[in-house]
Image (cartoon, rainbow, N blue to C red; front, side, top):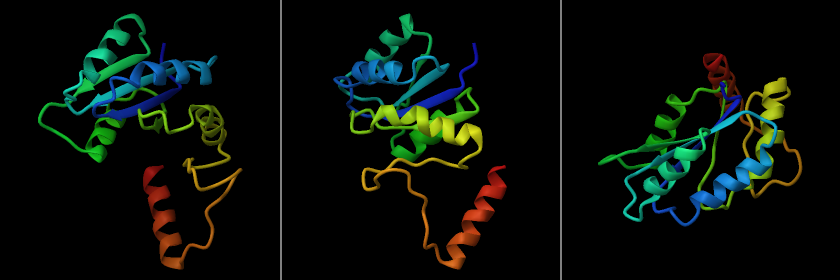
Length: 148
């Protein structure tokens, strides 16, 4: 079954959190077809081993172990490139991101109500970014056009 949503989770030393994160995401996305791609930067604490053990009995979970390659942005890009779903979310493994926001954010983008959804702990309720300079607005429109 093809996933509707891919969740990319870049990790480094998150072995204590990865199982709880997967359980929370599973509850939050009940009824939706999803996959989680754990992209681990060769954590010495065995994060990749924990993720791979979970993946052996949960086909929604995959793990990419990056040896001698580190960095958040590279891990995110690698996870996105290996995703199979038409929509992708990126979230931290440290349980600081609210997984219950994934479904409403996914629905907003899927329905076309939003081009992109970004979670922020500094914003309450539904907020739309405003106050862009004209240059920033043009750059944003160009980026959206390129993405389409």
